[in-house]
Length: 128
Image (cartoon, rainbow, N blue to C red; front, side, top):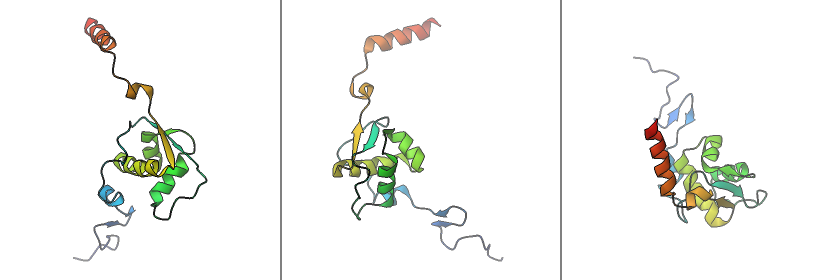
């Protein structure tokens, strides 16, 4: 059977999509951000967008800082850069630890839920 000329010789290379890199390879096996967790709705802002990043930073780090020159939520950033949310969280942890970005948690994420409000919502839904 003749080989398909469009078929790539390696599994990690897709002719139509280009190189395929697994998320754990991008983050070197890390799955949690350094410096602690943060909300996915937290706003990300570059501390100094014009400050050059160290050469040790990956291209995705540069893309995140470039895209965060104005406040952007973590999930919007992942969507805008077409990166997995887990990868973005790990890279944001790196950038936050190095002082290149600031994260601002939404007030609702840092406060516990009001039980009375939740009970009122449940009772209202039951009344329907």
